[in-house]
Length: 93
Image 1 (tube, helix red, strand yellow):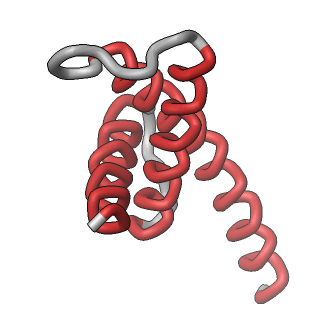
Image 2: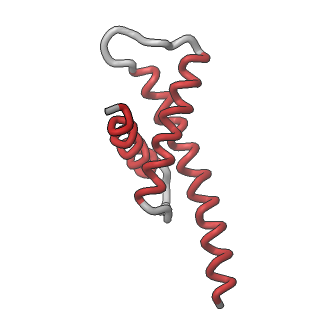
Image 3: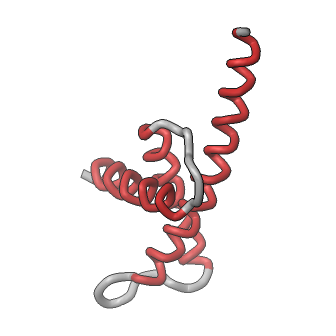
């Protein structure tokens, strides 16, 4: 059940990150979901480093760290995806 939640959270975080980044992102949905999962993991690690283990109710501070990490990872990952996709297109021509 943990993997299912990781995929769902990664999907939502990836879509939120894509919505927050200006312009068009070209990475496919499966890659955006992976970036979102990585954003959740990195965001949780950063939150723990800042002393946010768990709070009562909704962990808003932890979720903010996750969203910020997902935005950064989706942005960088999309740039890398386009760099490799651009190289492939040049090789085909």
